[in-house]
Image (cartoon, rainbow, N blue to C red):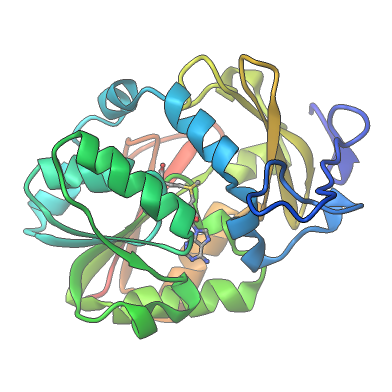
Length: 284
Ligand code: SAM
């Protein structure tokens, strides 16, 4: 075991306090006690511009596309799905891959900053994104129509710190799907992190070899990750450590009929090996 739940991983937790009232945040704001920041709304403040820019600059989209291969495209095509709502567009990686593959894609996110970046990333590749600013917990207020599939990828669902928010978001996803729609959602393998400890071989998963990502503090309701860039700048994300079977259970309780879980794009896996799990939940 590399650490016990509830203990700091690397000594004192770095605090980045925003002082003045800058129009554009230049530092993440976790206040006086970063470990107390466990609110579902905090994501908008965490993804500040400099973090997003740096992330996107260093993560090689081609390498990421290669490591994922056709996995999501094959799942969607095998089930005859055509219209896709990307609810966690971020900087647009999956929206762009699916648009290129011929799917009809709507790109939603609760962060205007992210959507602007995604739109620009797509434009540079000669594509136009149909974007919608929408928080998952009120998705159907801002998104109209029913989709064949919803994707929520890149370990996004982990941003919801409260169980009611998770239930609410899943219910909103459920109702934005057609009667035979599917939800594809991925998550980090937090079971391994909570039960065994973080293996540093996972430090660079999907971020290329330039950004290191590792948990700095973990307990049952917080995984605080530290992201370090080649220029030594450091950012954090405070996330809820979702256990795999907990997520599967929630999906079933919300009404999804079947949930199939893959580990790092494989159907069979040892529970502690994969870095990521991918759930495919079917509405009927
Ligand atoms: N899917 C992208 C990827 O894989 O590169 C982005 C993943 S990023 C880790 C998580 C995204 O989820 C961010 O763009 C964030 O703004 C969005 N997000 C987090 N909580 C949200 C919420 N409650 N409603 C809508 N979007 C949310």
